[in-house]
Length: 382
Ligand code: 13P
Ligand code: SF4
Image (cartoon, rainbow, N blue to C red; front, side, top):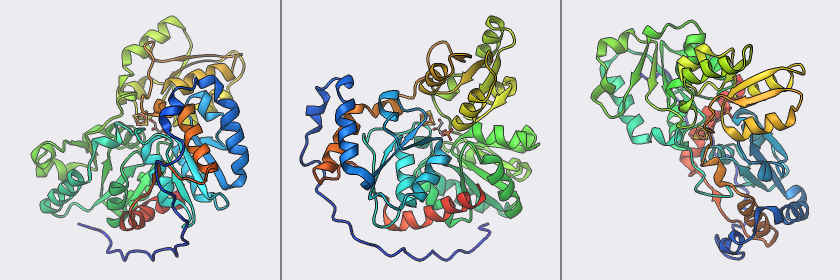
């Protein structure tokens, strides 16, 4: 079923950077005793003393106390482009979640090191597909025979699944370029296996005029994904059964209620939201797309936003001449993004000042090579 037989790309030449012993030096537990508010000056001083040796990337969901130190902020596409473009800095500190830092490590230069301020900042969506399950799925699809499937994998996935995607001729996508990548994928194969976010896959394919009947959901816990060979033959998109626990909380009732409470309000939803919610929304956008839509709207505009609360609150603060509310009145927070506190940032920066690298994210060589193929394919399409 594999559409292309790929030779592994050449390993980039490695320039060795002395790796400093992990966890030695400034002790993180000491930082926990320091209140958030007192860390601004220390974070600023550490960053200044590191100068061009460090670049800080911050996702839109990061809290204000952290993201204000970012040299670049953005959605995961913009940040991966930034990570690939950084050639001066020796250290890339990624204020985001684990898969984002892994992607930066895959795209970095050989002489750079990527740091995630808190190693516990994971992603519940990325955790919904493990490489063993994906390999089993692929073998089962091959056994059906004649399906001509190409994998398209959302950025929110482990490096191992990105590498699987590269090995099988597929591409990574993000929430802002999923349609472009899917269009390309259909020039390469007949069907797409879309991993691991069912909602992003369905929302994107539906907007490309692929009917719901041509999409099936692969449940990794059931034999042949809970599907028949016939259903697979009729499908154009095989959606992995995975979702973001934050975005799945938004419901059609929320859209109806906000429209009752604020007649005429515009609803904008992240494409990780359920299909039913996206159908009711006026607009769908990645975090960067949401930011652009709200920021560029005229004064007096009113927005109900279906995404993580830190971005919604920041948009409300930065647009005092507009009404910006969360689509879910019960606060949708990404608890793993929230793990990156000013204390973690200060700890990693002050360690760097002291010549120590802590919390380095390092993807192994073979995984990195193939994952880079899939990421670079996306970047060339984006
Ligand atoms: P973006 O692609 O909009 O950055 O979204 C990433 C993410 O994790 C949303 O939950
Ligand atoms: Fe992952 Fe959802 Fe958090 Fe995004 S909001 S990082 S998809 S858990």
